[in-house]
Image (tube, rainbow, N blue to C red; front, side, top):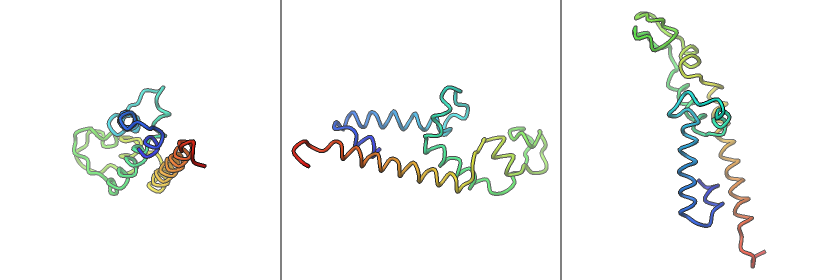
Length: 131
């Protein structure tokens, strides 16, 4: 939001662009849709929602998950006894990439890039009379 707000003089245009951008990044980041079309898959790596979602999944699934016989978890194979390991749940069901530390570092990198971009946008948009 800060980067887009610094890039536009018109508030209405900035709000419209941020809304479309945020919704697109949520969709591409796997927040609402897990199966992103192949031609759009590169966008998910730009989305902060991808890294936040995957880090939160890793923090939530910190213990083996009990099988309930519903066949939702592929590693349970329809069993109603036993447990699905954390690795199988995260990799097979959610396709999580990277560790919690990696995802948090990527979020920090995205924030820093946006801050530097906003700074550069503010510098380039200064009035002509100032130096």
